[in-house]
Image (cartoon, rainbow, N blue to C red):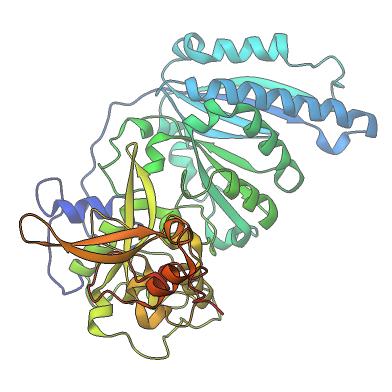
Length: 461
């Protein structure tokens, strides 16, 4: 049921854009789903492989280095082998102290695939010589189930807290929870750096579990659904608590590399639109405007969200309303990697006007955001959203381009000439003054010299 009350079908053949958005678009912001058809699969036996480090509370001071070495050895092993597991390893959890990996198949098949390698590491590589049996140590064992239904508790799962996960406020640490997708190529190309980072999470996240994604997650084409494209090339979902440690993970795998797991991302995740959907957000936002133009369906960290960005703070409202031209004018916010190519992410000036004040200042003035797309004919916000950005000084980049003049080509067409700020800085003082004080009366992706080369033209106070 759409926002206007109409009833539609959304599948691969009918309203396919809506179908794409609903599968990964997060939250109920496109409509109310009343019927769902699922594809079912044959029942598969499940093998649960469990590995524990036990007895943390019983450790003596002399035991800490040994315990720490066991954690170190585990991470070395897991970083090496987790990217290699085939799709029959259909999910699970892992952490410093507890791991449960699930295999969709028989125990014999699990043994041939990876379980044998795990057991060899446990029996021959993991240093258990100084562990104290009955006090603290490790254990590796398997459990078998006839089906996923049986693994999850079967008919007895209802109202059984041991078989049914609690949700929401049942977990005290939810407001401090952070989650990021770990790309396979990061695990394989930076194993030493990753090992060091994961060990640094021990202090605040010792008991945390992370998700092994597994199964067919990496088999689905990137554009098949609207989830963050990074999901299709990731192997873990890294869960942390604590702002400092979570920021460390965010810095190690930033939005330019990956994104968040939408189900577990932090309630105050910075730049959450990019973090949750990457370059899919632009299309999702356009579909939101098509199917719910009045924003009847609105929720926190959902596509098309309208409201405060931080609880308790009001949304920024420009001192003077943007013109209708500004409402629809688009600018280049950033570039993201999609299927090996860098593609521009664009937004409207109206969208920028609803962001928090500090974000607007950053987009209008920071060197990072002074970018453009010749292909799309779009400039940065600083050169596009005049009223919103007028109070901010643009911090130039040497490679930024400005309009230098015009000329008529052989076909009689007017062609714009542009130069980079680093070219301007090499000119004579008189030439700089001439160009900085000049004005080319043509709208283009490039700005005037005084708007772009602010340091050279002394445009900034």
